Amino acid sequence: MKRGPFLAAIALLAGFCAPWALAQEVAVPTLAQHVVDQTGTLDAAQIAQLETKLSALEQRKGSQVAVLVVATTGAQPIEEYSLAIAEKNRLGREKVDDGLLLLIAKDDRKARIEVGYGLEGAVPDAIASRVIREYLAPHFRDGDYYGGIDAAVDVLSKLIDGEPMPAPMVEESRSVNPGIALFMGIVVGIIATLIIRRRGVGVVGGIIAAAALAWVIWTVPVTMLFAGFGAFLGGGGFGGSGGGRFSSGHGSGGWSGGSSSGGGGWSGGGGSFGGGGASGGW
Image 1 (cartoon, rainbow, N blue to C red):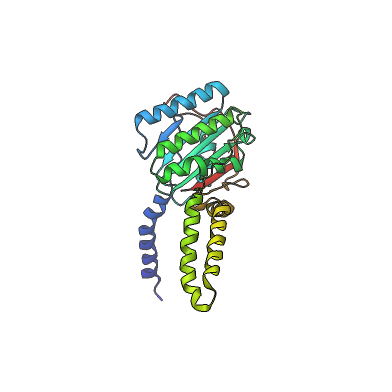
Image 2 (cartoon, rainbow, N blue to C red):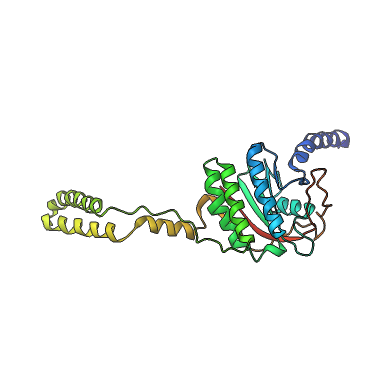
């Protein structure tokens, strides 16, 4: 068997695959300010408003919170990419480790809150997951990216300030009007009467069926049952996921970089991360 043509085919295939493989690697950016949008989703005024809030938080508490919007994380899981960014930029103060990164991968429809060691008490994994589910995702599903980011920044800032997390936000169940419930019961009862009279049950059976149905609709909020079931499943299609730490597989310092911002005047303060936080989609 001649190896020449075979090796040539392998080389040609590798040549075609190389650009695709390189395209899957997304560069880890150096953050020059609190809010960086690589997709053009936010306008200048919106970025300025978020910058003002996060700068005030840093001056007030010392904690550094950054927001990064990218198109995609490529072949990397969002957890790995987020940790890489947080560690390269070293958000938070050295030895205090009070940094936090809110990463949005717009085209992937995924978000991640990466929490530094020092903020894990204020923003534990379960709370970070709720922020994504209850504050970020509802706005994002409506195409309101600024509204979602702004709401998330507000609640995260309050948590860092020491305020408790508000009670879980659930969609209000639509109460059933008792008159409508009774009317529905009567209508169904009449229909049932017409059907079961042929079998000898009579009008009394229909009235009993109507009364029973009206009582059920009046006393059992069906929408609450569905809401509870949805919460049990984890919040539906836009649910967040926390739980445990994520290791990038590069060791504790494999992704670390300098804290230089590259001319923007703002940089991380030397904080450390261990993979705490939560991810979710919308």
